Image (cartoon, rainbow, N blue to C red):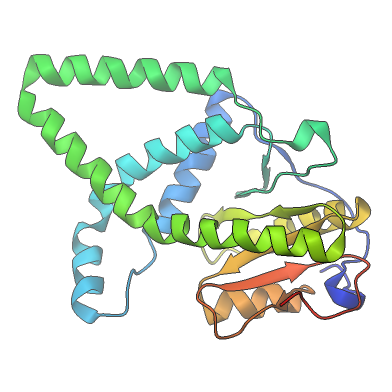
Length: 242
């Protein structure tokens, strides 16, 4: 674990992660994300949680496809270390900005068209089934999309307060979920951003994640907010912005 300094800064350590490239690697990372996120319980109501345990696996194909498309759009800003991956653009490194991967997007688009044609030839009801599975996946992604909007609003506040670049980290996922693969990836990302003096903000959807992030030098902006926003601001000794 890398040491943390004032204001949540992380001491420079080894940068071990690398951008995701190629169709095969993208398919693997999309599958890790699918298993990591779709395997989690959803909601606090016991009936909703029971229903998701029973029907959640049906969303896996749609979620895998959506993850594949996201990685294809984000490109080199998706990094991996071991069996963990996350979307963390670095605005001061041209090779780490959002940049689409045609080698992923084109085969994915062609695959969708082929599957649609085959499904239509076999049975039109298959298209309805596929659409239902895609809707399940979108519903599962709604909490992440909501937190993304909150992060973008807070990013503007942090940039104005700090006067330096701030990036948003999201879609951290590792498979198996309790394999501890995510810790080394986060440490490596923090080392890169601390070296470049770039701030990082993420959304923590659980107390466990808050503890994990704070143990690595993160600071919670508002403990009552949902989701709670955790920040790392190298070189800053003041409190998080209001």
